[in-house]
Image (cartoon, rainbow, N blue to C red; front, side, top):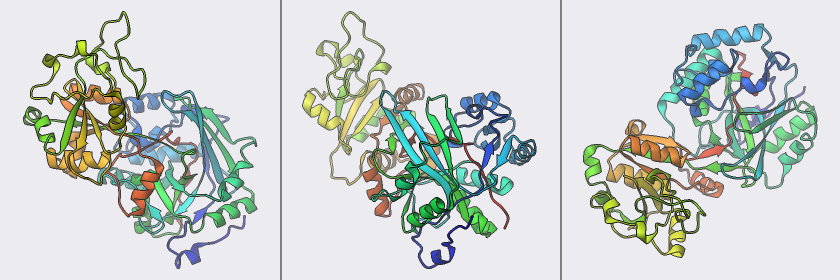
Length: 471
Protein backbone atom coordinates (compact mmCIF):
# COMPACT_ATOMS: atom_id res chain seq x y z
CA UNK A 1 0.00 0.00 0.00
CA UNK A 2 1.33 3.42 -0.95
CA UNK A 3 0.74 5.57 2.12
CA UNK A 4 0.71 9.34 1.86
CA UNK A 5 3.70 10.63 3.82
CA UNK A 6 3.26 13.68 6.04
CA UNK A 7 6.37 13.20 8.19
CA UNK A 8 8.56 15.77 6.42
CA UNK A 9 5.91 18.44 6.46
CA UNK A 10 5.22 17.73 10.14
CA UNK A 11 8.58 19.21 11.08
CA UNK A 12 7.35 22.56 9.74
CA UNK A 13 3.75 22.40 10.94
CA UNK A 14 3.71 21.31 14.58
CA UNK A 15 -0.07 21.42 14.87
CA UNK A 16 -0.54 18.75 12.22
CA UNK A 17 -2.21 15.49 13.33
CA UNK A 18 -0.36 12.69 11.57
CA UNK A 19 -2.03 9.30 11.45
CA UNK A 20 -0.87 6.06 9.87
CA UNK A 21 -2.33 2.62 9.14
CA UNK A 22 -0.68 -0.45 10.66
CA UNK A 23 -0.76 -4.25 10.59
CA UNK A 24 -2.95 -4.96 13.58
CA UNK A 25 -2.57 -8.03 15.78
CA UNK A 26 -5.83 -9.79 16.62
CA UNK A 27 -7.04 -12.76 18.61
CA UNK A 28 -7.59 -15.80 16.38
CA UNK A 29 -11.36 -16.14 16.60
CA UNK A 30 -11.18 -19.72 15.27
CA UNK A 31 -9.49 -20.65 18.55
CA UNK A 32 -10.61 -17.92 20.95
CA UNK A 33 -13.95 -16.49 22.14
CA UNK A 34 -13.14 -12.77 21.81
CA UNK A 35 -15.66 -11.87 24.54
CA UNK A 36 -13.69 -13.89 27.10
CA UNK A 37 -10.27 -12.39 26.46
CA UNK A 38 -10.89 -8.64 26.15
CA UNK A 39 -11.06 -6.27 29.12
CA UNK A 40 -11.71 -2.64 30.03
CA UNK A 41 -8.60 -0.40 30.28
CA UNK A 42 -6.24 -1.45 33.09
CA UNK A 43 -6.90 1.64 35.21
CA UNK A 44 -10.62 0.96 35.75
CA UNK A 45 -10.24 -2.71 36.69
CA UNK A 46 -10.59 -3.48 40.40
CA UNK A 47 -8.58 -6.22 42.07
CA UNK A 48 -11.63 -8.48 42.25
CA UNK A 49 -12.50 -7.90 38.60
CA UNK A 50 -8.91 -8.59 37.59
CA UNK A 51 -8.93 -11.97 39.31
CA UNK A 52 -12.21 -12.89 37.61
CA UNK A 53 -10.81 -11.89 34.21
CA UNK A 54 -7.63 -13.84 34.94
CA UNK A 55 -9.67 -16.99 35.62
CA UNK A 56 -11.99 -16.40 32.66
CA UNK A 57 -9.41 -17.48 30.10
CA UNK A 58 -5.75 -18.46 30.07
CA UNK A 59 -5.44 -16.06 27.13
CA UNK A 60 -7.18 -13.06 28.65
CA UNK A 61 -5.36 -9.81 27.86
CA UNK A 62 -5.30 -9.00 31.60
CA UNK A 63 -2.27 -11.33 31.80
CA UNK A 64 -0.36 -8.95 29.54
CA UNK A 65 -1.50 -5.52 30.76
CA UNK A 66 -1.55 -5.97 34.55
CA UNK A 67 1.90 -4.56 35.21
CA UNK A 68 2.51 -3.65 38.86
CA UNK A 69 -0.81 -1.83 39.21
CA UNK A 70 -3.00 -4.95 39.16
CA UNK A 71 -1.67 -7.69 41.50
CA UNK A 72 -1.92 -11.03 39.66
CA UNK A 73 0.09 -14.27 39.70
CA UNK A 74 1.27 -13.40 36.18
CA UNK A 75 1.86 -9.69 36.59
CA UNK A 76 5.65 -9.58 36.15
CA UNK A 77 6.45 -7.67 32.98
CA UNK A 78 9.03 -10.19 31.84
CA UNK A 79 6.27 -12.83 32.01
CA UNK A 80 3.99 -10.60 29.92
CA UNK A 81 6.73 -10.40 27.28
CA UNK A 82 7.14 -14.19 27.24
CA UNK A 83 3.39 -14.84 27.17
CA UNK A 84 2.95 -12.45 24.27
CA UNK A 85 5.70 -14.27 22.33
CA UNK A 86 4.11 -17.68 23.02
CA UNK A 87 0.63 -16.56 22.00
CA UNK A 88 1.99 -15.32 18.69
CA UNK A 89 3.92 -18.56 18.11
CA UNK A 90 0.88 -20.73 18.94
CA UNK A 91 -1.43 -18.76 16.65
CA UNK A 92 -3.56 -17.44 19.50
CA UNK A 93 -2.71 -14.00 18.16
CA UNK A 94 -2.41 -13.31 14.44
CA UNK A 95 -0.95 -10.28 12.67
CA UNK A 96 -2.76 -8.80 9.67
CA UNK A 97 -1.05 -9.04 6.27
CA UNK A 98 -1.97 -5.52 5.17
CA UNK A 99 -1.75 -2.14 6.92
CA UNK A 100 -5.17 -0.73 7.69
CA UNK A 101 -7.17 1.72 9.76
CA UNK A 102 -9.90 0.15 11.88
CA UNK A 103 -13.40 1.51 12.42
CA UNK A 104 -14.60 0.84 15.97
CA UNK A 105 -18.28 1.20 16.88
CA UNK A 106 -19.84 0.76 20.31
CA UNK A 107 -23.59 0.46 20.95
CA UNK A 108 -24.57 0.98 24.57
CA UNK A 109 -27.04 2.33 27.11
CA UNK A 110 -26.18 4.88 29.75
CA UNK A 111 -26.86 3.77 33.32
CA UNK A 112 -30.60 4.00 34.11
CA UNK A 113 -31.48 4.75 30.48
CA UNK A 114 -33.34 2.65 27.92
CA UNK A 115 -32.17 4.71 24.95
CA UNK A 116 -29.55 3.04 22.79
CA UNK A 117 -26.59 5.23 22.01
CA UNK A 118 -23.82 4.77 19.44
CA UNK A 119 -20.21 5.93 19.41
CA UNK A 120 -18.15 5.54 16.26
CA UNK A 121 -14.47 6.26 15.70
CA UNK A 122 -11.43 4.68 14.13
CA UNK A 123 -8.16 3.21 15.36
CA UNK A 124 -4.86 4.30 13.84
CA UNK A 125 -1.32 5.14 14.77
CA UNK A 126 -0.99 8.76 15.90
CA UNK A 127 2.26 10.71 15.71
CA UNK A 128 3.41 11.58 19.23
CA UNK A 129 3.86 15.24 20.05
CA UNK A 130 4.52 17.26 23.17
CA UNK A 131 1.38 18.48 24.92
CA UNK A 132 0.23 21.76 23.45
CA UNK A 133 1.68 21.06 19.99
CA UNK A 134 -1.47 19.80 18.34
CA UNK A 135 -2.11 17.40 21.25
CA UNK A 136 -4.12 18.73 24.17
CA UNK A 137 -4.64 16.84 27.46
CA UNK A 138 -7.49 17.77 29.77
CA UNK A 139 -6.46 16.07 33.02
CA UNK A 140 -3.46 16.03 35.32
CA UNK A 141 -1.72 12.68 35.75
CA UNK A 142 -0.11 10.56 38.48
CA UNK A 143 3.58 9.65 38.15
CA UNK A 144 3.35 5.98 39.14
CA UNK A 145 0.98 4.81 36.35
CA UNK A 146 3.20 6.54 33.77
CA UNK A 147 6.27 4.70 35.08
CA UNK A 148 4.33 1.42 35.16
CA UNK A 149 3.09 1.76 31.55
CA UNK A 150 6.56 2.87 30.44
CA UNK A 151 8.13 -0.26 31.89
CA UNK A 152 5.55 -2.39 30.07
CA UNK A 153 6.44 -0.61 26.81
CA UNK A 154 10.16 -1.08 27.40
CA UNK A 155 9.76 -4.80 28.04
CA UNK A 156 7.16 -5.74 25.43
CA UNK A 157 7.59 -2.95 22.84
CA UNK A 158 3.87 -3.24 22.17
CA UNK A 159 0.72 -1.12 22.49
CA UNK A 160 -1.77 -3.53 24.06
CA UNK A 161 -4.45 -0.87 24.49
CA UNK A 162 -5.42 2.35 22.78
CA UNK A 163 -5.27 5.97 23.79
CA UNK A 164 -8.70 7.63 23.37
CA UNK A 165 -8.66 10.99 21.58
CA UNK A 166 -11.16 13.42 20.07
CA UNK A 167 -11.18 15.63 17.00
CA UNK A 168 -13.68 18.04 15.44
CA UNK A 169 -15.31 17.21 12.10
CA UNK A 170 -17.84 19.96 11.46
CA UNK A 171 -17.83 19.33 7.70
CA UNK A 172 -18.39 15.58 8.27
CA UNK A 173 -15.41 14.76 6.07
CA UNK A 174 -14.20 11.89 8.25
CA UNK A 175 -17.62 10.42 8.99
CA UNK A 176 -18.38 10.40 5.27
CA UNK A 177 -15.58 7.87 4.75
CA UNK A 178 -16.41 5.82 7.84
CA UNK A 179 -20.16 5.48 7.29
CA UNK A 180 -19.90 3.53 4.05
CA UNK A 181 -18.16 0.68 5.90
CA UNK A 182 -20.75 0.28 8.66
CA UNK A 183 -23.06 -1.94 6.58
CA UNK A 184 -20.29 -4.31 5.58
CA UNK A 185 -19.36 -7.56 7.33
CA UNK A 186 -17.26 -6.69 10.40
CA UNK A 187 -13.97 -8.24 11.43
CA UNK A 188 -15.03 -8.39 15.11
CA UNK A 189 -18.51 -8.26 16.66
CA UNK A 190 -19.37 -9.19 20.26
CA UNK A 191 -21.15 -8.00 23.43
CA UNK A 192 -19.34 -7.65 26.76
CA UNK A 193 -20.58 -8.27 30.32
CA UNK A 194 -21.93 -4.68 30.51
CA UNK A 195 -24.00 -5.35 27.37
CA UNK A 196 -21.92 -3.00 25.26
CA UNK A 197 -21.69 -4.21 21.68
CA UNK A 198 -18.24 -3.83 20.14
CA UNK A 199 -17.87 -3.98 16.35
CA UNK A 200 -14.76 -3.46 14.24
CA UNK A 201 -14.15 -3.10 10.48
CA UNK A 202 -10.85 -2.81 8.60
CA UNK A 203 -10.24 0.00 6.10
CA UNK A 204 -7.65 -1.46 3.74
CA UNK A 205 -8.54 0.42 0.55
CA UNK A 206 -5.63 2.71 -0.26
CA UNK A 207 -7.77 5.63 -1.44
CA UNK A 208 -9.86 5.64 1.75
CA UNK A 209 -6.81 5.32 4.00
CA UNK A 210 -5.06 8.22 2.28
CA UNK A 211 -8.21 10.33 2.32
CA UNK A 212 -8.49 9.95 6.11
CA UNK A 213 -4.79 10.75 6.50
CA UNK A 214 -5.29 13.90 4.44
CA UNK A 215 -8.49 15.00 6.22
CA UNK A 216 -6.95 14.58 9.66
CA UNK A 217 -4.19 17.07 8.85
CA UNK A 218 -4.37 20.35 10.70
CA UNK A 219 -6.86 18.91 13.17
CA UNK A 220 -6.13 19.41 16.85
CA UNK A 221 -6.29 16.27 18.95
CA UNK A 222 -7.87 16.35 22.42
CA UNK A 223 -6.94 13.50 24.75
CA UNK A 224 -10.06 12.01 26.32
CA UNK A 225 -8.73 8.90 28.03
CA UNK A 226 -5.33 7.29 28.36
CA UNK A 227 -3.30 10.30 29.50
CA UNK A 228 -0.87 8.02 31.36
CA UNK A 229 -0.46 5.73 28.33
CA UNK A 230 0.17 8.70 26.06
CA UNK A 231 2.77 10.17 28.44
CA UNK A 232 4.47 6.78 28.77
CA UNK A 233 4.56 6.39 24.96
CA UNK A 234 6.09 9.87 24.62
CA UNK A 235 8.81 9.02 27.14
CA UNK A 236 9.48 5.73 25.38
CA UNK A 237 9.88 7.59 22.09
CA UNK A 238 12.30 10.06 23.69
CA UNK A 239 14.38 7.12 24.90
CA UNK A 240 14.18 4.84 21.84
CA UNK A 241 14.40 7.61 19.24
CA UNK A 242 13.18 5.37 16.42
CA UNK A 243 10.63 6.24 13.76
CA UNK A 244 8.21 3.50 14.84
CA UNK A 245 8.32 4.45 18.51
CA UNK A 246 7.17 7.94 17.50
CA UNK A 247 3.60 6.68 17.02
CA UNK A 248 1.06 5.39 19.53
CA UNK A 249 -2.04 3.24 19.05
CA UNK A 250 -5.01 5.64 19.22
CA UNK A 251 -8.78 5.55 18.90
CA UNK A 252 -10.04 8.80 17.35
CA UNK A 253 -13.68 9.86 17.67
CA UNK A 254 -15.60 12.91 16.56
CA UNK A 255 -16.08 15.44 19.35
CA UNK A 256 -19.82 16.08 19.56
CA UNK A 257 -22.53 15.51 22.16
CA UNK A 258 -24.32 12.86 20.08
CA UNK A 259 -21.18 10.75 19.71
CA UNK A 260 -19.60 11.16 23.16
CA UNK A 261 -20.98 10.42 26.64
CA UNK A 262 -19.23 11.80 29.73
CA UNK A 263 -20.15 10.53 33.19
CA UNK A 264 -19.08 12.10 36.50
CA UNK A 265 -16.42 10.77 38.84
CA UNK A 266 -17.44 11.36 42.45
CA UNK A 267 -14.94 11.83 45.27
CA UNK A 268 -14.79 10.37 48.76
CA UNK A 269 -12.43 12.16 51.16
CA UNK A 270 -11.25 10.31 54.27
CA UNK A 271 -11.36 12.57 57.33
CA UNK A 272 -9.21 12.39 60.44
CA UNK A 273 -10.89 12.62 63.86
CA UNK A 274 -9.88 16.28 64.33
CA UNK A 275 -11.19 17.16 60.89
CA UNK A 276 -14.57 15.61 61.66
CA UNK A 277 -14.97 17.66 64.82
CA UNK A 278 -15.32 20.97 62.99
CA UNK A 279 -15.71 19.90 59.36
CA UNK A 280 -18.92 21.82 58.62
CA UNK A 281 -17.75 24.92 60.53
CA UNK A 282 -14.60 25.09 58.42
CA UNK A 283 -16.62 24.76 55.24
CA UNK A 284 -18.87 27.65 56.33
CA UNK A 285 -15.96 30.06 55.91
CA UNK A 286 -16.23 29.64 52.14
CA UNK A 287 -19.71 28.21 51.49
CA UNK A 288 -23.33 28.74 52.44
CA UNK A 289 -24.50 25.33 53.70
CA UNK A 290 -28.08 24.17 53.21
CA UNK A 291 -29.59 20.87 54.24
CA UNK A 292 -30.95 18.89 51.31
CA UNK A 293 -32.20 16.13 53.59
CA UNK A 294 -32.18 15.11 57.23
CA UNK A 295 -32.61 11.61 58.45
CA UNK A 296 -34.10 8.87 56.28
CA UNK A 297 -37.15 7.68 54.43
CA UNK A 298 -37.25 9.03 50.89
CA UNK A 299 -37.68 7.34 47.54
CA UNK A 300 -36.49 8.65 44.21
CA UNK A 301 -39.22 9.95 41.89
CA UNK A 302 -37.53 12.61 39.77
CA UNK A 303 -34.29 14.56 39.88
CA UNK A 304 -36.32 17.77 39.69
CA UNK A 305 -39.23 17.01 42.01
CA UNK A 306 -40.04 16.13 45.60
CA UNK A 307 -39.16 12.87 47.30
CA UNK A 308 -41.56 11.11 49.63
CA UNK A 309 -41.67 7.81 51.43
CA UNK A 310 -43.88 5.36 49.45
CA UNK A 311 -47.33 4.82 50.92
CA UNK A 312 -47.53 1.86 53.28
CA UNK A 313 -43.74 1.43 53.48
CA UNK A 314 -41.37 2.09 56.32
CA UNK A 315 -38.58 4.60 55.87
CA UNK A 316 -35.40 2.98 54.58
CA UNK A 317 -31.88 3.49 55.86
CA UNK A 318 -30.22 6.85 55.34
CA UNK A 319 -27.71 5.45 52.84
CA UNK A 320 -30.55 4.82 50.37
CA UNK A 321 -31.69 8.42 50.38
CA UNK A 322 -30.95 9.93 46.95
CA UNK A 323 -29.22 13.23 46.45
CA UNK A 324 -31.79 15.98 46.19
CA UNK A 325 -34.36 14.29 48.43
CA UNK A 326 -36.86 16.60 50.13
CA UNK A 327 -37.97 15.27 53.52
CA UNK A 328 -41.49 15.36 54.88
CA UNK A 329 -41.71 17.74 57.80
CA UNK A 330 -42.95 14.93 60.07
CA UNK A 331 -39.67 13.06 59.52
CA UNK A 332 -37.39 15.97 60.34
CA UNK A 333 -35.92 16.01 63.80
CA UNK A 334 -33.04 18.02 65.15
CA UNK A 335 -31.89 14.81 66.84
CA UNK A 336 -31.02 13.34 63.45
CA UNK A 337 -28.59 16.14 62.61
CA UNK A 338 -24.83 15.96 63.22
CA UNK A 339 -23.54 18.13 66.06
CA UNK A 340 -23.27 21.80 65.09
CA UNK A 341 -24.71 21.12 61.64
CA UNK A 342 -26.48 24.05 59.97
CA UNK A 343 -30.22 24.02 60.47
CA UNK A 344 -31.26 25.72 57.23
CA UNK A 345 -33.39 23.35 55.14
CA UNK A 346 -33.66 23.67 51.37
CA UNK A 347 -37.45 23.43 51.02
CA UNK A 348 -38.62 25.53 48.09
CA UNK A 349 -38.89 23.05 45.19
CA UNK A 350 -38.20 25.48 42.30
CA UNK A 351 -35.31 27.12 44.06
CA UNK A 352 -33.96 23.74 45.15
CA UNK A 353 -34.03 22.44 41.59
CA UNK A 354 -32.12 25.47 40.31
CA UNK A 355 -29.48 25.25 43.00
CA UNK A 356 -29.12 21.48 42.87
CA UNK A 357 -28.41 21.56 39.14
CA UNK A 358 -26.05 24.53 39.17
CA UNK A 359 -22.51 23.60 38.08
CA UNK A 360 -21.08 26.09 40.60
CA UNK A 361 -22.61 24.34 43.61
CA UNK A 362 -21.38 21.25 45.44
CA UNK A 363 -23.51 18.42 46.78
CA UNK A 364 -22.09 16.33 49.63
CA UNK A 365 -23.00 13.42 51.87
CA UNK A 366 -21.64 13.58 55.41
CA UNK A 367 -22.54 11.61 58.54
CA UNK A 368 -25.82 10.32 57.12
CA UNK A 369 -27.04 13.63 55.67
CA UNK A 370 -26.99 15.52 52.38
CA UNK A 371 -25.94 19.14 52.01
CA UNK A 372 -25.76 21.74 49.27
CA UNK A 373 -22.73 24.05 49.30
CA UNK A 374 -23.02 27.41 47.54
CA UNK A 375 -19.87 29.61 47.32
CA UNK A 376 -20.01 32.76 49.42
CA UNK A 377 -17.49 34.43 47.15
CA UNK A 378 -17.15 34.73 43.39
CA UNK A 379 -15.07 31.86 42.06
CA UNK A 380 -14.46 31.08 38.39
CA UNK A 381 -14.27 27.36 39.14
CA UNK A 382 -16.92 24.75 38.40
CA UNK A 383 -17.83 22.18 41.07
CA UNK A 384 -14.63 20.20 40.43
CA UNK A 385 -12.47 23.28 40.79
CA UNK A 386 -14.29 24.29 43.97
CA UNK A 387 -13.77 20.85 45.46
CA UNK A 388 -10.04 20.62 44.70
CA UNK A 389 -8.97 24.26 44.99
CA UNK A 390 -11.12 25.31 47.96
CA UNK A 391 -12.32 22.30 49.93
CA UNK A 392 -9.36 19.98 49.56
CA UNK A 393 -6.55 22.53 49.59
CA UNK A 394 -7.83 25.42 51.72
CA UNK A 395 -10.33 23.74 54.06
CA UNK A 396 -8.59 20.38 54.58
CA UNK A 397 -5.05 21.27 53.54
CA UNK A 398 -4.76 18.26 51.22
CA UNK A 399 -2.16 18.86 48.54
CA UNK A 400 -1.89 17.01 45.23
CA UNK A 401 0.65 14.37 46.39
CA UNK A 402 -1.63 13.48 49.32
CA UNK A 403 -4.71 12.89 47.18
CA UNK A 404 -3.67 9.30 46.49
CA UNK A 405 -3.95 8.44 50.20
CA UNK A 406 -6.88 10.65 51.17
CA UNK A 407 -9.20 10.60 48.15
CA UNK A 408 -11.06 7.74 46.47
CA UNK A 409 -12.83 7.97 43.11
CA UNK A 410 -16.03 6.24 42.03
CA UNK A 411 -18.67 6.63 39.34
CA UNK A 412 -21.42 5.30 41.62
CA UNK A 413 -23.18 7.52 44.15
CA UNK A 414 -24.14 4.44 46.15
CA UNK A 415 -20.53 3.33 46.39
CA UNK A 416 -19.44 6.86 47.32
CA UNK A 417 -21.91 6.85 50.22
CA UNK A 418 -20.77 3.38 51.32
CA UNK A 419 -17.11 4.41 51.28
CA UNK A 420 -17.91 7.60 53.23
CA UNK A 421 -19.76 5.59 55.87
CA UNK A 422 -17.13 2.88 56.19
CA UNK A 423 -14.20 5.32 56.38
CA UNK A 424 -15.86 8.14 58.35
CA UNK A 425 -15.42 10.50 55.46
CA UNK A 426 -17.43 12.76 53.18
CA UNK A 427 -18.72 12.01 49.68
CA UNK A 428 -18.69 14.81 47.11
CA UNK A 429 -21.02 14.42 44.15
CA UNK A 430 -19.71 15.88 40.90
CA UNK A 431 -21.87 16.92 37.95
CA UNK A 432 -20.71 15.53 34.58
CA UNK A 433 -18.82 18.03 32.47
CA UNK A 434 -20.13 18.87 29.02
CA UNK A 435 -17.84 18.58 26.02
CA UNK A 436 -17.97 22.33 25.45
CA UNK A 437 -16.81 22.93 29.04
CA UNK A 438 -13.91 20.53 28.56
CA UNK A 439 -12.95 22.12 25.24
CA UNK A 440 -13.11 25.62 26.77
CA UNK A 441 -10.77 24.60 29.58
CA UNK A 442 -8.35 22.91 27.19
CA UNK A 443 -8.33 25.87 24.79
CA UNK A 444 -7.13 28.10 27.64
CA UNK A 445 -4.17 25.82 28.20
CA UNK A 446 -5.54 24.57 31.50
CA UNK A 447 -6.03 21.05 32.79
CA UNK A 448 -8.68 19.58 35.07
CA UNK A 449 -7.92 17.73 38.32
CA UNK A 450 -7.15 14.03 38.00
CA UNK A 451 -10.07 11.71 37.32
CA UNK A 452 -12.34 14.57 36.29
CA UNK A 453 -14.13 12.77 33.47
CA UNK A 454 -15.33 9.27 32.73
CA UNK A 455 -15.87 8.74 29.03
CA UNK A 456 -18.43 5.97 28.67
CA UNK A 457 -18.26 3.26 27.53
CA UNK A 458 -14.61 2.41 27.95
CA UNK A 459 -12.70 1.06 24.97
CA UNK A 460 -12.16 -2.67 24.97
CA UNK A 461 -8.53 -3.69 25.46
CA UNK A 462 -7.53 -6.59 23.22
CA UNK A 463 -9.64 -5.67 20.21
CA UNK A 464 -6.47 -4.81 18.28
CA UNK A 465 -2.81 -4.79 19.33
CA UNK A 466 0.15 -3.02 17.75
CA UNK A 467 3.74 -4.21 17.98
CA UNK A 468 6.41 -1.50 17.76
CA UNK A 469 9.09 -2.48 15.24
CA UNK A 470 12.69 -1.53 15.98
CA UNK A 471 13.28 0.28 12.69
